[in-house]
Length: 287
Ligand code: C5P
Picture 1 (cartoon, rainbow, N blue to C red):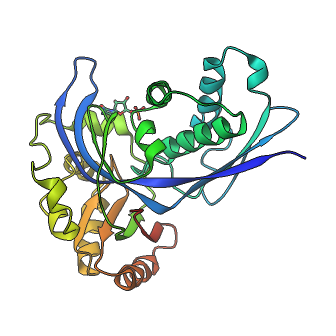
Picture 2: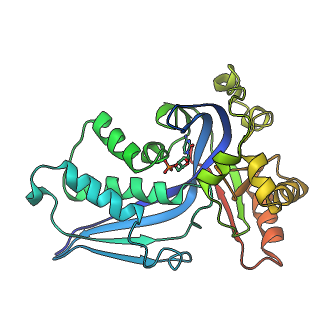
């Protein structure tokens, strides 16, 4: 009987994304507070006679036919690392694509991280954490944090990770289904050296709603200039009783953080009405 393993690939939300500088190679230096949500994609890996990749889920179509999928790249990169091909036999990988692509919530990175986890388990591979993190980083700046999928502060280009204590927060994700190009948004950012996260943030996070208010996403200005609906969504989130409304990553997904799950669910109903094509997900962050 074939063995199969299913791994949850939670959405990544940049509760704050402060851009503090730029490296010589063009990558930007970040100071970002990140949480992961209950909603996400799902990756299933199973032993098979030959390699295969299948897709399902609301956003499967936007990936169909794409040979450069991060799931495939993760599989191939892990295989390339193992000297003995017999240790990485053929696999069938299924991706349930529930998150919109190019949307600032790290769907592709989460899928890559879940693929690495699933295949390491299926193939009984145990890698030192530095080796695994380096492999993850080679797939994308957000992949190491997605391997953690727990609240953290990410620094460097996103690879220097510090876990933080953050309770589960009711959160509403809203995406107007306009894909955003991450390199394009970074290119449009004129001020690269912005203030980092506040020094006292770790203790302030005991009262998360208050602590989040003064934080920023420095990519939100350039993203709003390209896509004005982002500013409107944030205004609407506040109108629907969100305590904090902000954009995640390079957009266009915006999030609202609420006092209660009920308030979050109510706001979701408001957003869904009249906007059937949008991605609207009432969920919670994982503590
Ligand atoms: O690493 P990843 O492929 O996810 O990054 C996509 C693009 O986003 C990079 O090519 C780069 O232009 C930009 N980026 C950046 N600084 C970061 C992360 C990403 O400039 N810290």
